[in-house]
Amino acid sequence: MLRTLQGKLPGMALGDAFVVYLRIFTADTLDQPDKEIEKRLKKIRSELLIAHNRDNVSLMESSDEAVNAGGLITKAEKLVTGPDSLLSKVLPAVTYSRKNPLKAAFIYDKKPDASNWFFDHEKGRRDLENTYDGIVKTKRFVTAEAKDGDTETFYASFDEAADAAVRWGADVVFTPSVRQMDDTLRAAIKYSNVKFLNCSVNLAHHAVRTYFAKLYEAKFLAGLVAGAAAAADGTHRIGYRSGMPVFGTVACINAFAIGAAMTDSEVRIHLDWATKQDANWWWDMVNDGIHVVSAVDSLHNTDGSDAYGVCHVERCEPGQGNDLSGTCLITHLAAPVYRWGKLYEIIARTIIEGTYSSSAVDKKDRATNYWWGMISGVVDIELSDAISPYTRRLVEILRRDIISGNINPFDGELRSQEGIIRREDDAPLTSMEVIKMDWLNENVIGEIPKIDALDDEAKATVKYSGVEKTKTGVR
Image: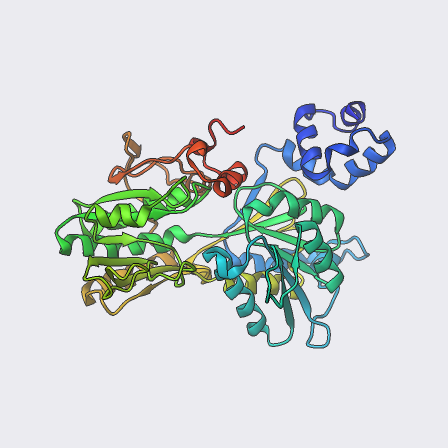
């Protein structure tokens, strides 16, 4: 096998090619004849090219650019005809209709009612189908253990779920967890006529596109609300519950901290991680006397509590509260929200209109990552009537400025816990610097955890997409 790899991939480090091969094909294929290995190498040639390319991720930050990619083709190019022409890749080969709908499969590795993350994506799936009124049909395939009374079919493995999705006739398959990337990649190689997308960012594969949302924009606005509440409370303290230290998460923390400092210059953000081993973030914050908390980033909490978004928390008499214990009174102030249905709607539109495979989007030596924010309607913030009209007005003004591109949370001087990151006159942070951010703003109390401090599910996730400080020491 090694001789075959060396002969087919001149200029690429053998070890790098070997790792890519093993991520897609199992180790038991290593002793098979060279001809079989050559067939597999042909299937993953684009994956190997991308792995060999240092600048291997193409961020598509404009949903309009994705939808209108066909408009980027010149008149001269349109004159070229034939089955392999550029024109054939832009014009839709299939006309979708209510009689011949686009079929979109969603594969979950958890039951949606047991996960905030999958619950929100499940809502996005339903919104997608409702938006297109019969032109798009969706179906979910869940890998989970079936229990007595379950009426839904569950699958023992990702491969079984993917096979079932293809038998159903899926044109496109969405996998909402970064943990599913290797499985998704393997399925995409196996079913090359089906489009596969994984919810992640800064992962480089040609067979699997990725998509993610710029939640940090909404978290910046949520920070404004939380800062105003902490100032009014007089404690100048905010508890911040974060999930996993993966790409994009630290940008959310810092954008929130910067926003909070704009309405309370004395504020301190007490950071805790819900995915640490033996995490008890809620009671640690409440017992520490913190009254303003940034909890789960969803309008729904699958643990049944009201601890989501930015909220004000007060202890109360037992039985009079609205948390699970009945001893805390929670008042909601604001909630940063994902609009996954909007994102899925845009991607479906690129497939329906034929721009998904445009050469402006589909680059052979770079992976396509969709990364959209408030301007695309993929993230937003919801405000409670409990906040002051002045805070509401400030948030609405800055929300419009973010959408118009007049303001970025990371403009101006940036100071981390260790010192200055960016001076006022320095070049703006690049999108990749925002995604890979692994420093914490100066007003944050806490740290980015190492992988050994995380629970098993988080460990499995950060191995794919963890920020550098967390992945240090990954085995």
